[in-house]
Structure formats: structure tokens, C-alpha cells
Image (cartoon, rainbow, N blue to C red; front, side, top):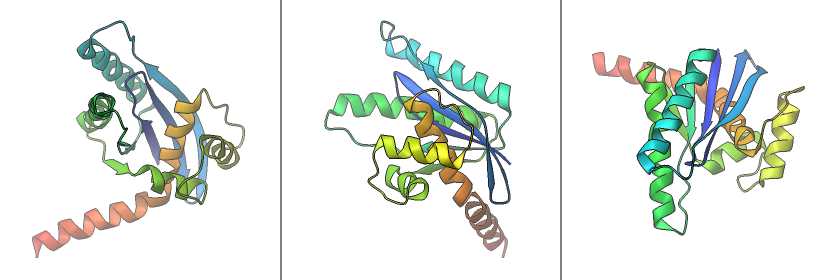
Length: 170
């Protein structure tokens, strides 16, 4: 199964593609989609949309996972992050990919073992879990962590969706 992890941000949305086979994880690609801060918000969102669209077109993932919004102290920044996050949810969904969302602490706990791990710890563990992986930047490292977290929970999520659908038919 090919998984896309997304770490939303208005300046940089990190992305990571991994493949899972049983309990094995394999790194395929990672990077970040950037927007031009001199453009309007709408134009920047289009840049994010186009970049995520290209990643999906190039790598053809089966499922996607997105980090939930971390609430900043600055409400304007939080709203802008929410809009970038909306693009991260929208694009995979438009490709009919199942999209899961994970809280930052759940991602950190599933990758590092501690819900309050620092960025350096996440980067180190992603490198250990994906041997030979050249991580493009901190946004890509976070996105790979999202994909790894999803790999841990994807089977359970699929089973729950299936059970819920079956219960609705009874």
C-alpha cells in the first residue's frame, strides 16, 4: 500500500510517500510544496493545490493522512494554517483517496514513543524507520512521520470503516 503523508503549512506543506508491505516500511519520496509569500492568500492556496496535485499524479498513493491543526497563539496564523490544511484534505479527497487525520501528539507517540518529542527526535526516528532515506527538510520529515503514523493505524481504520458500513446495512 502506498501512503501519502502531509504536514500542512501555508509557506511550506511537507509531503512524504512511503510504501507498506505487512510491517515493512519503504521510503519512496519526500519534499515540500512552497508558496510565494508575496502573492495573495488565494494565489498561495492555488500553489499548494497545484503542488499536492502533482505529488499525487506523480506517485499515485492509495491513501493519504494529514496532520491536524496545531492551535497557535496568533489567531490569524491559525486561520491561515487551517486554510492550507483544507487544501491538504481537499486534493487527496478529489482523487477519491481515503484521508485520515492525526493529532500531532499521536503522530509523535507512534513514531518516537513520546507525545511531546522534539523535531530533532522525529527526524532521527524517521531516518531510523526508513533506512537510506534522504530527508529534504523538516517539513518533509514531519510529513513522513504522518505517513508512518498512518501505516501503524491504517488497517484498524479500514476495519472500523468496514464495520460501520456493515452495521448500517443491518
